Image (cartoon, rainbow, N blue to C red; front, side, top):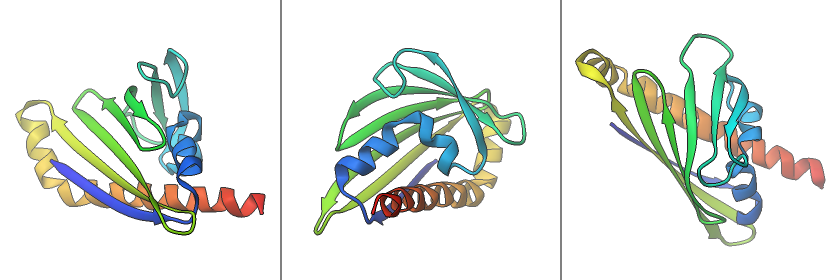
Length: 148
């Protein structure tokens, strides 16, 4: 299953890329993440891994930074017991200090039951993806206003 969300953010590309690529910011904009636990490597750099600890529930994701070509793109892999999510964030410059973020997530469910659940939950998964990216946009724009 694939989900794509596009948002225009009122901040320069370099700033958006820096905030997006820093895993320490995840809990600041992802409402369902309590914190991250670094596992290996220099956090946010290619090859580094960390665990996303949820506020509620037991779904633990281990994130791996697959590739980063900042300020233009970032690739992550999120692994849980039932699903792997490949995340590709592309950042492009718009006029007057604005940035377009295209977030693509590809879900690969493990097993027949999880695949069936994924098909039934497509709408909720896409809605959650959209909610996360909108929350990131608001986080970046709050950061910018705080410095003005």
